[in-house]
Image 1 (cartoon, one colour):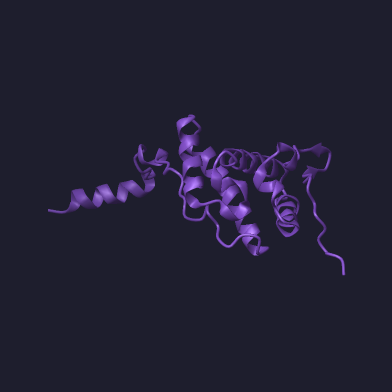
Image 2 (cartoon, helix red, strand yellow; image 1 turned 135 degrees about the vertical axis):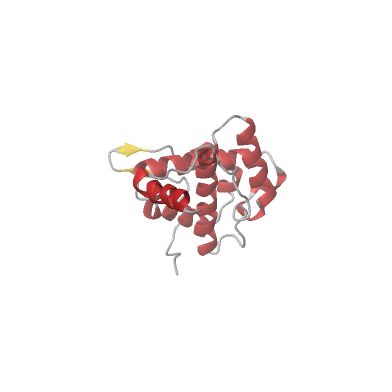
Length: 163
């Protein structure tokens, strides 16, 4: 009996009229040691679950960046051994490099979703990115709340009319 999901490495993730960088050509140990089920889950994640070409490209870059970051660590040689500490260190490294908080959150979401897809395929037991949180953006705290004049007038009139 043959395997219904043949090995798909090298992994090619392409979009109509636009070729994306193949993830497997990055020479990443975690992908090289991935079993065929994990390879298929990664392919399915990038080709079927991400319909927008720009999102696919951004998530592909984030996944490659993360896997490149963990490849220098003992736990980064295999997808199953990557820990939440590795993800947390990657987020800290991105913060130190000066990336904006929304960019870091997007990249973290990409890795979180990728490991979620690997969990659904039973390729990894846990999602190491699930417990890691990005930095809180407080851009809206500097602005006072907006109250239109038509709603503000009755409040002012009521407060003046009281004895």
